[in-house]
Amino acid sequence: MKILLVQPPHWSPDGHANFDAAETLIGSSSSAGPPADVLLLPELAGSSLPRSDYLARVRDLATGSGMAVVGGSHYDGPVNRGAVFDAGGTLLLEYDKVHPYGLELRSGIRPGRPSAGFELAGHRLHVLLCADLWYSASLAGRDGLDAVLVPAFSVTRWDGPAPRQGAVATHERGAGVRVHDVRGGQRLAP
Image (tube, rainbow, N blue to C red):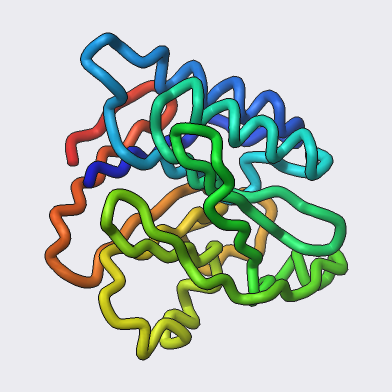
């Protein structure tokens, strides 16, 4: 399984602009097929898009790219929430940030509910949203997980004015997971 991490060069409070930037970075699918099985966007790629707009953008990115898309997240009211669609446009999972952090808590973001994970092409995957990674012990007892995907706004314990957006993929067992990273138009080696 190949996972493509995409990080636009700048985060925008306009979720449509973030999705447009991601589409530009991945380009159109070639006749050789999509570059990966899963595309992972950073946390808050959808910013504060209304739920219907956010879900439509993630679904359209999945069907347009030919990859399953872990859509980062967006603020769905007081919950930081994301979605996964397969390449055919089927909703596989909605996931919430269970442990809002710092500025989110002070801004009224509430904890969401834990998700069950999803299966794709015979692989068992789970999504932890940003700070939820610090509580990854919650995955104990979930045998057979092949990868944990972490859409993150910052890859540090940031609580200041200048965040760094990021996306992280990690695997628990030798499941043949390969990660490719695209940041700001530059493709980095796996």
